[in-house]
View 1 (cartoon, helix red, strand yellow):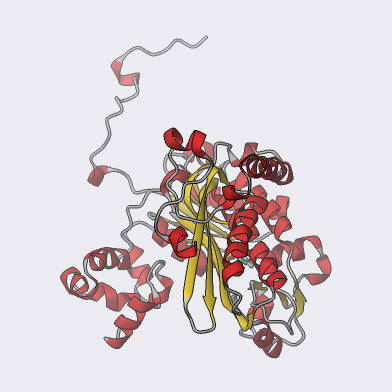
View 2: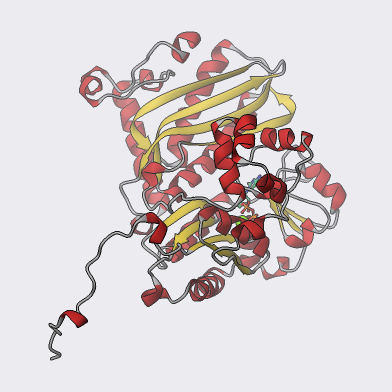
Amino acid sequence: MTAIPSSPAHRAPARQPLPLRQRPARSILHVDLDAFFVAVEQARDASLRGKAVIVGGDPNGRGVVATASYEARAFGVHSAMPLRTAKRLAPHAVFLRGDFPEYERVSRAFHAIVANYSPLVEAGGLDEAYIDVTGCEPVVGSAEEAAASLRARVRSELGLAASVGIATSKLVAKVASDRAKPDGVLVVPEGEEAAFLAPLPLRALPMLGPSQEKRLAQLGISIIGQLQALSEPALEGLFGRHGGVLSRRSHGIDPTPVDGDPDSSGKSISREGTFAADVADPEHLRAVLRGFSESVGAQLRAKGRRARTVSLKLRYEDFTTISRSVTLRQPVNSNEAIFAAADALLSRVREAERRPVRLIGVGASNLVADALQLSLEPSAAAKEESLSAAFDRVRRKYGARSLQTGRTAFDVSTREKAGVFEKSAGLSSQLE
Ligand code: DCP
Ligand code: MG
């Protein structure tokens, strides 16, 4: 047995937190799968590889492109483009409806692989994650080695290409992964963040909104370097207190931690879409709502969250917009439960208002951490069944009233006896 050295020279130095300035720079990976939905289709059907493939649906229908293979992107096709336009640009492309349950299954497998690289990982969405590997060298090697290993595992286990950005902040790592695509790795070394960002267009900076971009364009500012040249007070003059944050972000300064705690990120998740022609058919509306509910549910599960509140948004042909929400006793994340809540809201609204709908959306808010770890969860189907069953039990027990609309403040002490949902003034009274 080896003796434990007792001389002070051999003892590990006492762990004192270093003041911020002296802390070593962080080492953050942002990983994002390439052309995710299409790549999943190509992984299971070799005949689609190397081709222009577009996931979204019927090219003659009203839908939009969810994603396109890089071969299709060469023709100008991109996400959110109407499918008809995509068909015109790339008539030879293979159009697929998409298989959301499969994308969700692969997303879970992806996040399970990512979780091996650090205790500090944050799901950015179905196909992206941040990994803080600072101090993980003894286990995963350097950040570059971790990226290479992660990419190799995603390739061999899922058959997918993952691009990785490596930098000292989430912001710069994300911009870097985008620049590394397709199927690449880009490292932005410490101290080179501002120079890396300088030549890029404003929209490369995550969270710079279209209205900010427009405002800056009016001043002749189109690249990040021009933003860097403006003083912080000047940007504060333009955008208030957000100006200071924008100034720092333009230099690649972003102290946001990679957040392993799902409770403290993102306040809501929603999905909405505008019809090419207004829709009054209730079955058509329900079908779209179901699709959006699945998408929202998948994002909730990918982030390891549940929602207490589900909301419905409708816009009519004259652009009047309404939203209705319901707060549930059990926070939910299954497709069925989200759809059931949204659908009940829809039925309620349509009883009073049958006008054609221009836009429909479903949202999940009031998010809480999922008690179960992603990788330890039972199969999605089993969980959906048990959750849906629980939801049905609630409805059976408390009746249709349990799906009343209304923004409600859940309060265990007062709600246990009185029923599942509490109406408050606000939205529900508008509906009554
Ligand atoms: N997605 C969607 N609608 C959009 C954008 C994306 O349904 N407007 C879906 C399809 C994408 C997936 O989300 O495959 C991931 O989104 P990304 O932005 O990461 O896009 P991709 O992975 O498709 O392409 P890449 O990351 O290579 O740019
Ligand atoms: Mg992607």
